[in-house]
Length: 429
Image (cartoon, rainbow, N blue to C red):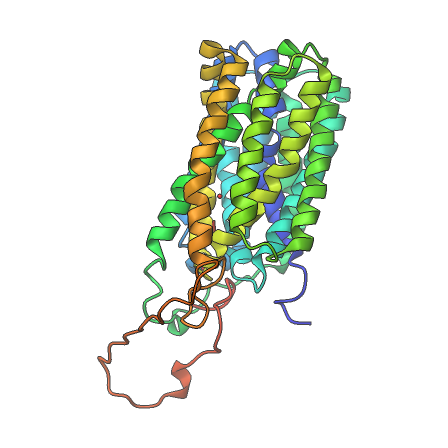
């Protein structure tokens, strides 16, 4: 069976290890606040620093995965080692500066693993399916950890130790990644420029604020359940596990639907529904309201995210927009805990939820516009079509002939999108 149709388990494993830190953010920040001499805002700042370092790795490596010495395998292993060392150090120490340094180092490792995974997923024949499998995997693992961690005792180190252990357990999966750097002679001319810069830039900007709005609430969801709704940590953990379980069902539905509904409808309508869920969750004062808001929200979030990742991947088969969009999402995620802590401290949780909900409704407009413009497909002359309209005029491709037109069989490669592992490639919001 070809590599295009087999399940990319190594990429799914890397995706899981890279994204897990963001999924465990509420319990990580909450335990930093409770287990160390930190205020809620200071704990949120450490969470933001962790995720900011992850986003930085994505931006730095976005266009370099296919040129890294040793290939994706070595880069992925470097990221996993950084994650294990950083999170492990932060878990074992009670000195605040060491915890911060370990969290930042671990974030760099998570971002590196996510970058390799996003680049490989974007180069596949069906990036939506691969990103859906990654979201299923990380949701299932995070849900299991939310059920387990509260029963293992107090302390700030357990979520961080789980992140370190996940990185180590992912190491064997890297054996199936390409081990050699691509050779440069097969790179097609002009691959240095990003295709569709306007759509990509608008998508990256929109998903930054999309992630910021949601992770501002996600970063303080644990405190909302504990303080405003009056729940225990075990109950809050059970709600989060149920919410992530609902996310599994949502991602499964998204995977089954695939491109049947296009991308504009899931992204636009899904974001509007998420805004309602955030307002409900932020105003919760009892278990029923809190659980309803969190479960509905987490059922919708990975669905919309999977379509955003697929949309970014469709803009560039080399995966550069997928990585850049994913890194922009990570920037929003990184700013979320601090923004949520500041907003809730000054305005209260219900007002914070209302502000974030309005912001999401505004952000839904440019994201939907990009999905409508591209239709989620490569912009080839035979396929450019705005939804509900006539096909656009064919694009004209000009090829400069600065060398004699002498046939050379060695200068040609196989037709079709370039695979990330092929010799010389997101964003998966």
